[in-house]
Length: 230
Picture 1 (tube, rainbow, N blue to C red):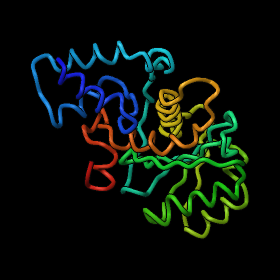
Picture 2: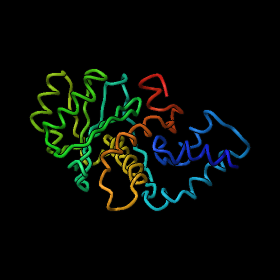
Picture 3: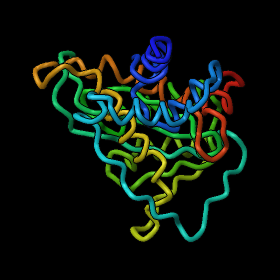
Picture 4: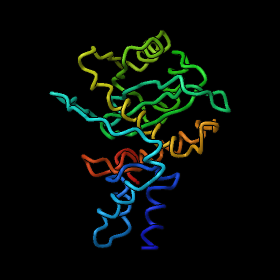
């Protein structure tokens, strides 16, 4: 039992693990450890985690869409969204720009003070295009900062297309919205109290925890699918 606690703390409680839910925690531990009733013990540990119980939002019921989107090739389609305004951090940051790749579920994110179209275009170029290559399609929710002139020029430059889903097809940008909930849950577990304002420091750790966690459908992590390694 003492060694169990060490494993649970490393693969659930640590800053690298991000206090993710029981299935993700079990998948992490099962890669390196095994003992009888491991899955049951993981569920018990996560249910008893005070950080998860006091700070995380309850899981929302997911209603699957009637028709799934075709993924295409890796890097073809990214969903883009901005979260905020958030409490101003010590560094003056108030927003998080994030994008999720559709095939691998790989996420990239950064914190910014302002969420202008210029900032979003800069994010796309730096964190998506220059790292993973030009995309073919960009999915957004139609917000002004996601459809401005700078975004339009970038999309034209890449010979791509931008899709702004109609209200009755919100599932098209659901991936990135769910990612926003995930990183917020992770970051909240790193905060000691409401007076701590360095949340922007921990966003990168939350992104790492998400990308290194096994996806429930394909049984591989976004890191493995995008990078070929955990």
